Image 1: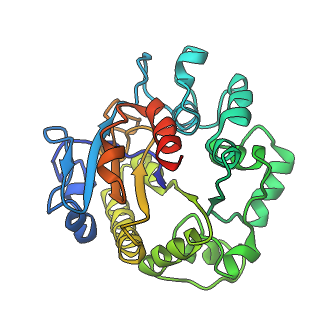
Image 2: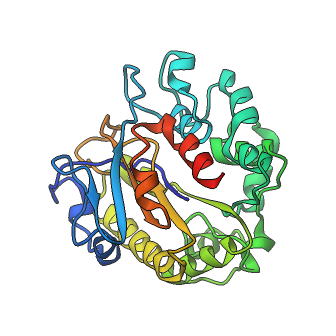
Length: 297
């Protein structure tokens, strides 16, 4: 599962939507030459299916990462539980929900081997030691399920991926010297890690940053890197027995005319085994967790 922070389905307008300004040959190939937009939210090709997911959760206001990600990875409408959208960190009353019902714990409970593929630098662990409340949903869920986050050594030895896919940012920021790989190689690595697990999650947040920065150049560069990464995954995976899911928590990057999040639906892209079975079931963020549990059972 590839989680993209802040990616919605927007207008087919290259002036504001970087998906229609960027060169995305791998994604277009999977989707039969098309990309989803507000006038065509669903796409079903031979290789992939795309359906829209409602991210508003029937709660007023703009969707936020804390509640959106909690909903996505627990199946519980977190915004309705607390009466509002909230983020980027999960609201304090949502923490017990994340601890008890997160996707890693639930899958482990039915005997599945799970993986959270992101690596974190020592600076992050130092930050957590001083600011325990400033943690996003996925690392919180992973540790609550009894696992340790990947560190420098895991990244150096090819057992994890850096948050920027290639590792270039890790080196530039002085987090440590690790091999810098291409996005396509990173996609192959993710598939090789999956071979030893039943479920793998990779979290990519730079899409949301680009949306808030409102930089078309930055957004296009991020999407073109992401496109090659997805191409590497699709190229390396066995589509008869593996399923790639790509989705998000709320809209943002698809409309650079605004600095805020949007109320647009988010895409669910499914590639590989049982892609059509899964793509027909979820209608909003609450449906993703039950659908994954069902298909993996």
